[in-house]
Length: 458
Image (cartoon, rainbow, N blue to C red; front, side, top):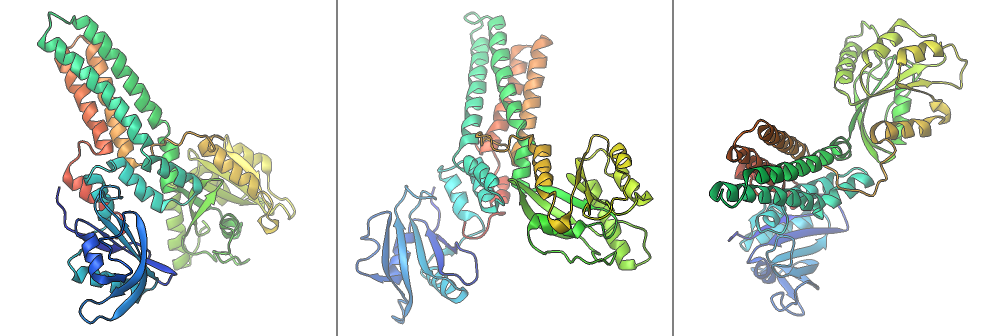
């Protein structure tokens, strides 16, 4: 496969100590060499070395930058092509000038994710590993990073490949029975098919059991803080974020719109939404905020309902306890440092099986118990397990579900006495679906769509 030479800035834009311009392709080293002046040329440099020198404009002989240039020869590079990384001073002007000079010498500006796409197209990584690279960049907790790193290293790919091999052997056995029925009894073929297909289905279902946890680690848990005005919702947000992100006053209705923050709670990433206090109001702006709050409750994966220990339970409190029923939710009774006027027995009765906790956010009491309750609710205390093979990608989850259902169809066909060649169709379909997870059987438009989500220069 012949591809042109591409270049892009691989570090975030803005001021920094170092900026990196990456060049990949057959002409990468030659292009960089035409800009470089050092003790020796880059074409003479050994592979996987870093070389000190300067970037010089070949037309004016003007020294542009003092640089360190990494030279890596194909195929032992990320893209399996010749690869050069120019380390220059960070800053918008510096890195952009170096990039522009590389483009002037014949490189093309890379598309988003094109370096990783080339690693996939050149066979260095498969599609699930490429998606793991994106997850690694976007990881918001150590645990999410470990899961993404596991995917980049190919643990999921390895398991999928083994399952595909089992199905391939099953298909081959069926083919033998069809082509040479005198040498292979159909009953024996069906027994083997049921055994292997059943094993693959069970393994797929085992992977899918990690899907909820993996998806949470990858995307964050959509968490809504609700309650009447002035019960401590914004204080709770600030306590979980460990920063004063939301304005806290004694005036009801201070929060009029939704405030969104990401927070790491015991390794669980939360997309935390502090909503406007839910109450009847004539204030037009506050009313809009209240309606948004109600809508978010219906979409949330976790609801944190805050009640005021210093006030009697109101009709609005009871409505909130009712609308959050049937959802993963935790009831937080705040302001325990003040006189208790809340009927806790009634609260527990309305809460049902939901966890009820007490806090004094003013004195930072009860936050540890809340964080532990969130972890237990979604990870059942198993968050520190050594098994990092999580299925976290929505595309993977959908394909695995389809493959599991297809194998179920195949096994049902066997039980119904269908001809073995008809059963083979479903087994082959399952094999193809698993191939889509790792990119062995996937169309070009999907590949383009996936890699377009990457940042430029990755």
